[in-house]
Length: 142
Image (cartoon, rainbow, N blue to C red):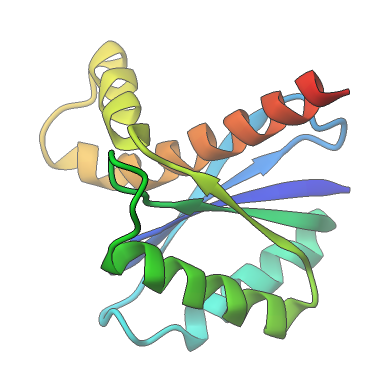
């Protein structure tokens, strides 16, 4: 069983996947859509990945404000969570994603990723950071 990490954006969903032992997280892909509300193909792709990688749980980034309050993006993420759960039957855990974009930017700086290429990778790297945080929490809890 693997765990899938998702970073839900207005026109993209970054996807990361754990290894079968739940030790590491790898960036996998970015699912793109033309319009924010057009989620059918996005959900279908997530379902394909669940089957392909034998996913047993999903972690979805929750974009909280720095004061712990929830804004519009958090509400949209919660709606997306409900859609995924209804469609897949899997449990979706919401995970605080504050500062993941900042961390993703730092990783891209270190890797020398410049300009428009950054947009190509940021959601995927953010999904990996979300999943890494969740996996680390799970290891420390034991």
